Image: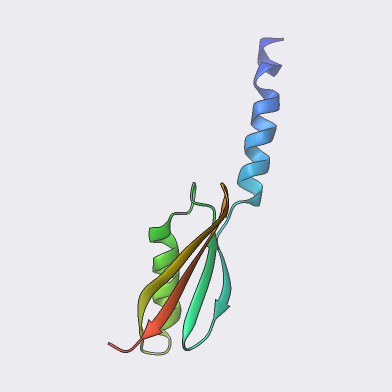
Length: 83
């Protein structure tokens, strides 16, 4: 029976990790918005994704704001700026 004691916890963690993941919600020449979980994917990870998105247009990235919707759902909004 000891083998199965941690099974419910494993299911919960797998569910949380399954919902986790970074997603580009908006990507234009002027702005990029990234959804991330704040646990597995950090603000630094979101910034790197935004940096690459802005670089496609020859722009640099500037963090505009962060919205924390829930413990596991955050949005980072970036502006693509010259220079």
